[in-house]
Length: 168
Image (cartoon, rainbow, N blue to C red; front, top):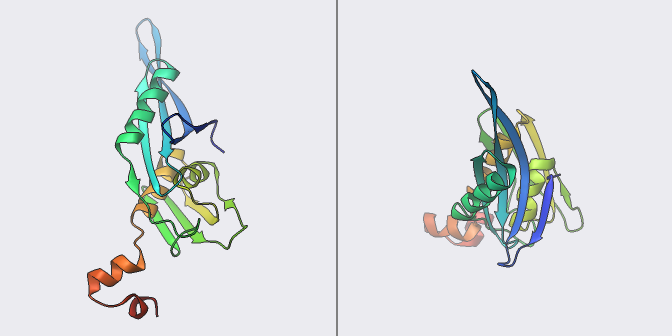
């Protein structure tokens, strides 16, 4: 589960804070701490973005990450609150397997993946993280898998066939 759940903001976006990482730079006089935030922003209707922000203070890092996520928003073809077909997303050593689920199943996924699904508007999905469980890589793998998903209509148009021929 994400550590900070901001419901819909004034502009209609759902903002989720996935993780905050504290880093230290060691200098002669001691340590200088900085913070890196990972956030997910979505409209709950098929658009989602992932952002990272770094600063010396947590609120500034979170604000930068939210702005970055809004800049990097992409569309995801959500079908009736679930995925079009089974997907796999890979980023680094993190591999995410996502399966469409029937109505009423809910979001069965780990914390970082759950934030992405809630922001994009997917309500029924089964997901499993395989390999690295680093939240940054898991979120990026989930984001890549979702943005690579295409609709049967798009595939049919690309191949010059009808949707019935594609779906079978």
